[in-house]
Length: 112
Length: 113
Image (cartoon, rainbow over all chains, first blue to last red; front, side, top):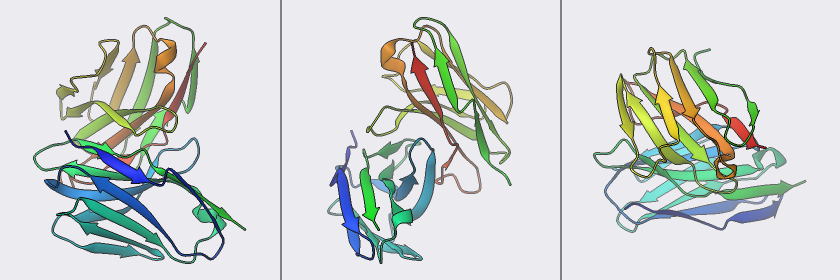
């Protein structure tokens, strides 16, 4: 059974700092890994999707990496802003499965 | 804009009183999913429809049912809500052109009195 873990559960940083969020998964047989953002009381917004054959994806100030063999991914946020404050969720789509398995998320607070 | 719409955004019901949550989509996607997300927890897949085929997760309680009358709409019915069913319910879709991408609605937050 696939399990996804995100560390830390919460993170508070000053504005302008670069930061890394971590995600690990137990079964390396995945189609892809996705990072989502969730604002309080809202649904999920897709940020980045990395296919299992890829090593990283970039979108603006966000960079996500994937090391499938070790079951790890990181989300790097450059020059953080207060508007980046949200919960970031990592999810993996298993090989041969429709099931997207989520971690519990990292709650990020960027202080002005 | 094409999107996934959930109604209502907030729903309050009484313990044991049936409640229905609604999801509609303008993306013409063939797959629709329902997730339950409790506070500070990971979203948990309850079930999904692949076209008209219903796929239930093994650990989804019998109290939860779903209907998909057409491509655009999908409903989540909770027959006898308990206090433990208070959560955010998220609807998502995926389409044939990009089946690995999930498009989420804004969710319905369900409270039980």
